[in-house]
Length: 96
Image: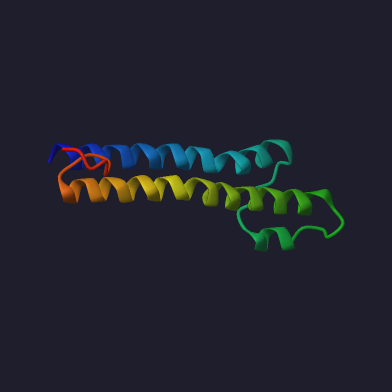
């Protein structure tokens, strides 16, 4: 049960770190521009010729890119931990 709790603890720790990291572009946009951009629908409501519309698209696209970049290693580590727990070893290394 020790390895399972360690994996759960690390997963919770990752979730907290990712939630903070993924809020950074929105926070920066809120501080600099003073608006909250949460989806592409909000971007389309902005003035087409204004800089807020383009900033909104950049902020939303950077959030999306962060999700793509960070999802791979997290899924890989989860898969290795899951295989390690099923096989009785740690991190899928093949050694007991």
